[in-house]
Image 1: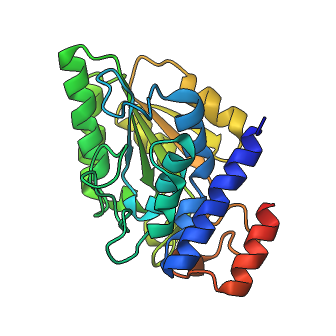
Image 2: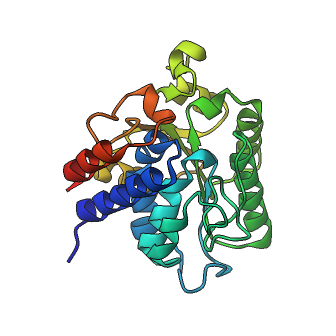
Image 3: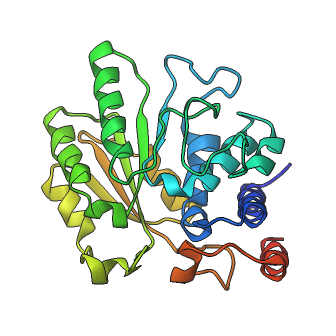
Length: 264
């Protein structure tokens, strides 16, 4: 039987192959959320790959949609669509576009791209579920750089006022965004306190420790829940970890070989 860690490594292998073949960016952003996505789709969320629109399902929103490779790879390994789809990532006429398109990719809840949009849509879904009496939860991964967007905080203000205990915000706090270190652009060292001030149950965890992630996701709260996940950009490949360049670069043939060796 394949172990958790083996499955997580296999997802990362798929991502590095996808990004290398397509010669596109954002592999660092994708790698930082793999452990979280794995636990959501394989351990936590109520989903059915054979019936993606199941009414009582839990829903996932990747608000930092530029990390689409991580979500696509996770969905494929979970059985939402054939693994062969991954070969068409970011290719002309391919099945998996760079940013999320719910019209062409099975298992997606929304189309997303511009930062700050996905999380508020997820809030709307959680509010609709509550009003309709649907039990499914809504989970959304937000980037730390995305927390610069005002729309994130407008949604953060609304959720507690509507007592949306079915909404979980997961902040990918990898501390690097497009122009440099996140906290040098807009200081966010007090992210936990900010979410708490808006009325959320905020928890800080190691975003790569499977036990910590699972415990935080399973914790029942009387408020909307915000999980501040301390992660590493490029996690899993030594020469990519904590490097701004891998927000933009794609691995060449030699780098692909080294990455796959490390992930094996």
